[in-house]
Picture 1 (spheres, rainbow, N blue to C red):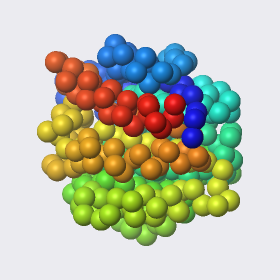
Picture 2: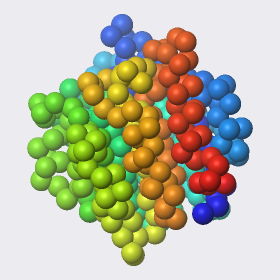
Picture 3: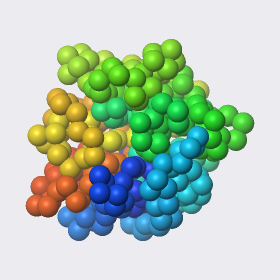
Length: 305
């Protein structure tokens, strides 16, 4: 497979709760920091620039709706235009977030090529399957997968119109290891037809079998493409401390590469979004360097070029 790479910056923090002191989180700085580490050159990519987000509005959690609901909806539509511009022309899109709410815009853009049968590989330490009522924070990031699959009484669950952005039967959730308190929608997840492969299973099962099962879910023979959403908190905090909600355990970068490589290499893979790296929690930029090294190993020589 030989496809060019297009990088899009999605410097958004509107889908994640503020810091404890009330200041908006600095995930918006992530695309700039990763570019500073030479990511564009190392991926031999075309840089399509940033899609600027609206400002954070709901510092106080509103009643009966997600924080920044209107802002996230508008941003998702703007991001979708940039993403679709890349993949419609055959490029593999790499979207640098930002918080997990950017997956909504990525899927909306992917649907312009893949249609309603688009698939989704959601790689995350958390299920992100809470409803607006279940979410502890009211942040869209904590319910991004639920909204993408059409759950919740909010305009954000209807961005795809009459159908969800992605159907359960075309979703694989890989790597979650949050506790069983239900804050991330675990009971609803268990009742869904989403393929759920927790972190412990990723670490013990044959990774090629996991990849094959995942591809059967997200890229069936009649499917026209799938998206990969990667929250870097799926990594062990010893390797990736610069995240908002670290969970004990997790994958090493090498283990994550083993899981992702067959997915990225599949001809139906449309792009990958990377989220929740927070430069404010990475003063020496060691985590940024690790991410750039990992993306280069995943996407550069021998894979997409």
